[in-house]
Amino acid sequence: MTLTRASGDTLAKRQGVDDVAENIRWSLCQVASRAVAGRESLGSLRLVPMMDMINHDQAASKFEELTGEERIEDGSFIDSTENDAGTFIVRSRRHGDRKPLRR
Image: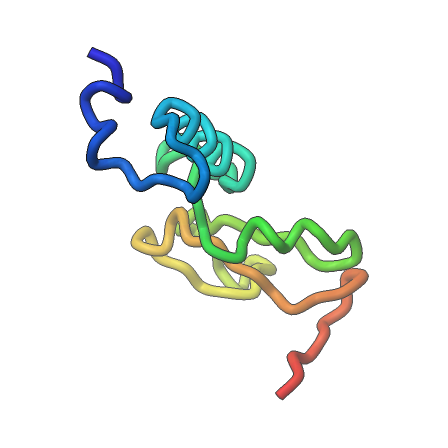
């Protein structure tokens, strides 16, 4: 049984598009094009709100995924624990320099 047949009646529909298969394709493309790649052990693709917008400015700092082993004494900017593994961190930096956030 296909996903369209199994769940077609319960899937949300986009305005003006009645074809359920087209809606499924559109949804999968949204996830595939906007997902953030992470470590495979923690789920290789994740859809994180606003995270996909960071790469639109070349001068902005990139996001980092914590391993859970970061230590300030080793040069990291944060002490992390095993529970932090897989967390994405965004720092306010531009051209490599700290950029204070506006109020």
